[in-house]
Length: 512
Image (tube, rainbow, N blue to C red; front, side, top):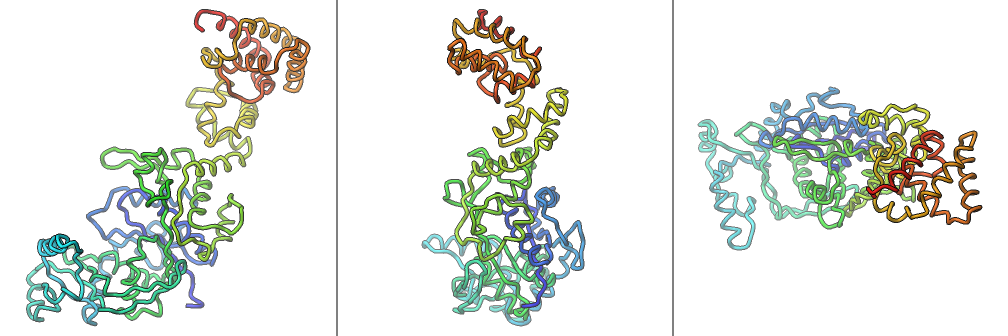
């Protein structure tokens, strides 16, 4: 194991959109692989044909691509261990199920679903839980209780069967988890899991997962905490198949928790509290749409950054990291054991940090498509100035319109609350005097405009807020926007004077 090449895999099932917890698992695998100069493999585990959802595999690939996670081997990329879609590997698994039966580590079971359901109901009626294990297996219909010729007859006659792992009785399984340390489980608490089914001649997750990880020479399995209960079975399968010396090292990541910190983060939490839990938007078979971080306006770098810090910390106060920094700094040793609470407001904060770090030109370019939707044609250098004045005020590019629309469209209505507060009987006269002052200004630049208005206010003994708020109302139509002088400079002298005069005419009318 010491000189073994690092090979990790992300192995989602195409049963729907990829949850952000799944993306975090992919990310941590990716960081680990890149840091050690190893390989990141994407394997699609689609052996559960009942739960297969059309479009889910494409979604997984697109989501990883959007996040900047580069796959070394996978369905799209190919590779030396192809195929990477489990349904295309279906002919591989039966030989290993057979090997386990032959070695006495597994057995055929012919129990009908209704028999097992009855046993389950009986156990529950007594306040317990039905477990198919050493205590009951010999009284059920399987190759441990039936004569060999009867087993053969049933298989040959087409009876439905499954292969179950023969869990040892009262054996301590000692496992090492890179995050949780030593894990000890007694096999008497475990059941005889199904490994293979004759109904579709496909393996269950447990067998396929172990066989594929062995055949693909996976060195480390980094996966979610929900798979920790399966670890004893997987370790025992490696032993039973004679692969213990090639068994990967395991690390089970902590859960992503609800914003309340109570329970696993789910789609329902996002729907209820108004935030996405999927990287990309998803439309299900019923036409229901689930929001995505991409469509909500998040930068992929911000999404990656916020996920990286859910369950891992660098040991410093730094919070903003590039992908390269995350790769260099990441370590399994600094992954937490306890669940990581997701904070939707912190997610917005991350996006804000990435937005304000972009140049004004970059932000302006990202804003252009939104302006096109409003049929706004603006000089690009002017747009760069505008976004530079307001980008600190927003978390998302799409919020820029709300902060800047008055630069492109003259107000025709005025915010009632602002009018009530800032438009008094003497205000029209003040605005007319400001107009007269501004007409005389040349050149038209923010510094001169600001000095002129301040001098006017001081000379006349007015309160600063009284005049400035009234001017803002005239130019913007509301109590928002950057500095008055900056607004005036960008609007230009002619437009500024038109807006001041228009506001006096309208706000002195009956409408307000």
